[in-house]
Image 1: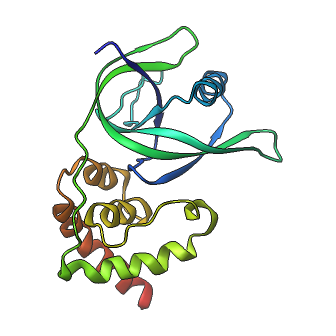
Image 2: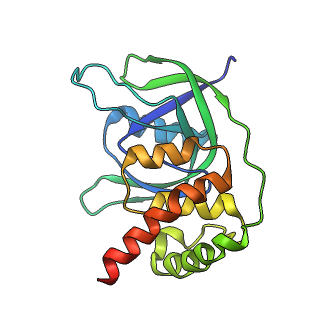
Length: 196
């Protein structure tokens, strides 16, 4: 594939359909954001792996393309953006440009089909509706699909206080019901902790 994608390795996992706020201050990423906004280009977010050698970056292979939906200048002068996840991709290879920006060749992964949430997980959709209404501005413009198993699972995976490894596992799961099965016990455990 001839196409390349600018990469933004982060200690975070982005899901399709989900928002992520970012503070941009390194010149390589300021240039990337400027180019993406001018040319309406996506960039790729990948979970960065812990690495002792600081000079090289190691990431997972599956990430999410992101499009910038909003930007603002912070009171500290740092550029803030909100990006929304679009599609999952598999990184094939990457190189580092002279300015330090990583770019990679990639393949878009097949999108999960929309799937009606099964009755046994219906309460997760209802709970998510309550939670999202409390999350405020970040989720104001996100299109909601509380009856879609993929959408509900991805939103819980991004907002639950679970490890980035667990979030990445959820991103790599290809089956909406399997993702809900994986998340349900964690959700129950968190709810029990908070109700005590």
